[in-house]
Length: 135
Length: 135
Length: 135
Length: 135
Image 1 (cartoon, rainbow over the protein chains, first blue to last red):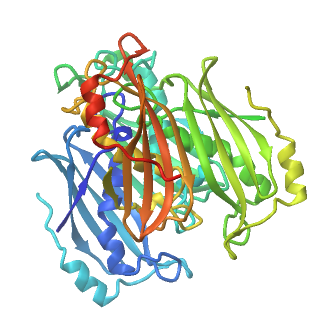
Image 2: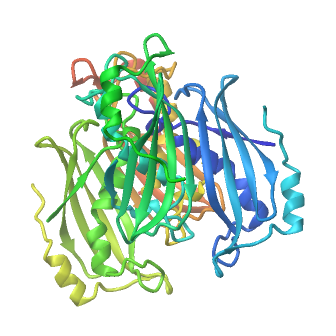
Image 3: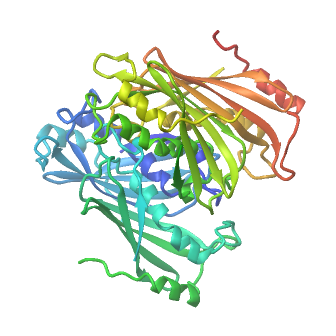
């Protein structure tokens, strides 16, 4: 598991006074940067150096998030399959769980447009961040 | 079911050359404007006039979306429960299904901070947009 | 001059109840799609097909923009220089001017990383959309 | 002057491979959070506690910003007028100046909808962050 600190932006709020739910997609994406780094250490992203494509994301909104306080995103790898893996993420603010979700990421060859097996050395690196989801 | 046309923005693309997956959250939200209108016809949103809160969203990314062509979002109500309902949405581009997902929306009293039953007249309006999800 | 209709998104609002000022950057960008089309008719954007780079943008916020009503963006070309041109844009809602601004766009060779003259045939197409700024 | 570190998000890039210019609006806004805090220390934003409204922003894009490296936003107050002030901001990446701009912020009474003088104690706090713009 790793943590990422987010400082909410004024524009992240909405007319109801809290962080708009669509913003979580961007926050969770930022918190997955370490995953991008495992697969593309230089972060020089192109079709030859990069091999991840997003298949699915979901978000459960369990509490309001306010503007005035930083948010901690906790992320971990909850599943490693043959050609894909799942990142489980939570957003915490002031000691309260506010949102949680998953990203199912497929190992992908952008040139051939086919999914491919996650290489063994990447599986080991992902496994270092394994988490078990709360049941 | 109703449809909403989206004209992609340059900034919606990402370094891999297609629409970034996080953008779908904003597109599907825009396409739910008719739902907001059912519950708050004036769209003058505040704690007294508005009664919807987002509980869950999910997104399946099944095809690339490119910048150069408009996108059609098809939305419908796939479930009407006692205190919540589900909107099912699809993004189509050039005759291809590119993404689909759900939004589970709770009927909510922002003053008392409790979920409340969906009023009967609103259930009837939602039912006019009922869709059955493809199995 | 050409016009683009924008349907505000719930997440475009902020805690003060109106459209957040940063959103105008994305709206004005969407409204410049016809400019992209002049320089890259296929909209298949890459370093060989595309030749525009943003040098400057500015925004004057002269009135509140609310969520509940569509916004009309009026855009035109207010200056055509040798290697750059300026797009002047206004956002109107309900008959009121709410924001205006400029984008200074440089004609650019992404391979050589140098600015280059705007080709004559593109100048003619830009000139079809010439506007004079209100003084 | 104060500095804010930004970690670019994958979705901040665009099809040309760099950070999209519209993203700077959100980054500079985040970097102005200390200004919001001067005027509303609790950051509990509403029409009674908050007194700032955006009048103008501008952005000069002087160099490409890439995804792979953090960005430092340097911000300072470059002008304090009677009823408004100006924040000058720069974005640096890897020792290079990439963008710079201004935000002209008006002291405002949201109830009466009129601009009002910047209170003396706030002027003193702003003055602590005074910067002189490079000529």
